[in-house]
Image (tube, rainbow, N blue to C red; front, side, top):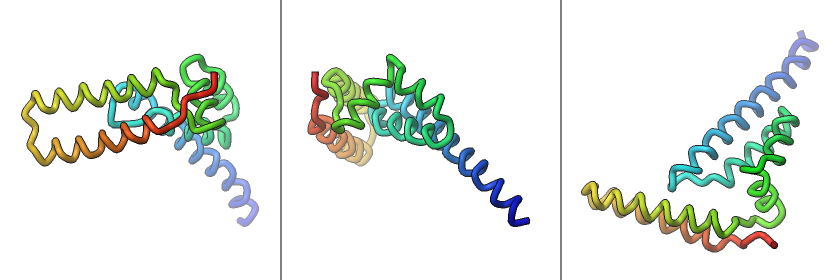
Length: 131
């Protein structure tokens, strides 16, 4: 019985890391189109989780033309490229403008503004990657 549990534990751990990686990558992809959801932390988390469960997927992510530079920049210096900063902040502004247009309640607008300003400050304060 003890041997069976010892053999099952690595498989279960690997499955959990794989699930975490896939979930984080999915959230990162959503973050690319939803302004309130960040992309970079989820993609970095996905690469880390895949490193524990599926190194081949981690390698694909790190060599990807879409996510590779994001992962490298974040790992090396916590940096976000200027174009991604501008895009993220512009998308947040557009969504807030849409909320204003749709006559969302004042409470929702205040909460949304508070969250978006906090996210924008965080994004703006991140360093830019070295050229």
